[in-house]
Image (cartoon, each protein chain N blue to C red):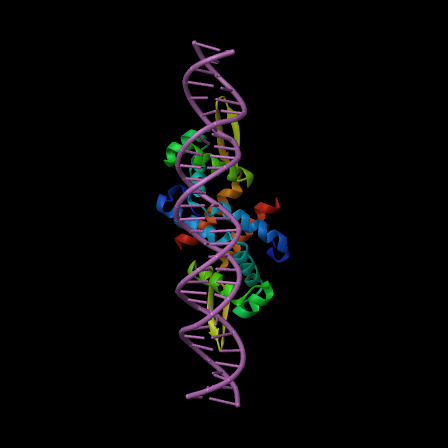
Length: 99
Length: 99
DNA sequence: TTAATATATGAATAACCGTTCATATATTCA
DNA sequence: TGAATATATGAACGGTTATTCATATATTAA
């Protein structure tokens, strides 16, 4: 648990940027898919019924925010959740909307 | 802690909407101000160096998402954080950007 | 009731952002 | 090397949204 009393003004902008990444239904759906298991881009697109391009653009944003990682396997690139932080943040959000 | 395995597709949109509210630096700054103590609108505007109107518009959004509450005290309306959920979500976010 | 103070709100503008489309890059296999 | 497959990327379009400005509403004090 952070001591939010010591958070600096600068960090608040980073924090808003982070939440902004979670604040899109496409990215949330991608994250929830990856909660189940890792996926190559094409499978994600099919599972979410979206174009490969749209998914790829969003994965780039998620990667940049370090919410997902990836690795190449042959022709495919496999995406996965970066760490348990992501799971925790998602869970806190769900707690709020479900209460 | 939620069991995110059981989250339905519908809820994901609500979840994205929730995070979208956190994903704006003005609203984050308001929430952090309220983390310290409750404030009337005018004091918030002064503290954040923003117009009263801009703050009021954002407070409306925060209220609608049940992240803040308010009460009237004479001519002023005092805003405060709704509950500890908000604190937890903010903390999780800080943990992520600080690591 | 009238003036002053505090807050809310609607309309308009400007900036931001997600998707689409076309195309580029990278890997594998023949 | 060339074709096929998988993914990435840049530009453009359309929709969303935060701020500003003007004004409305609500409360208090005279």
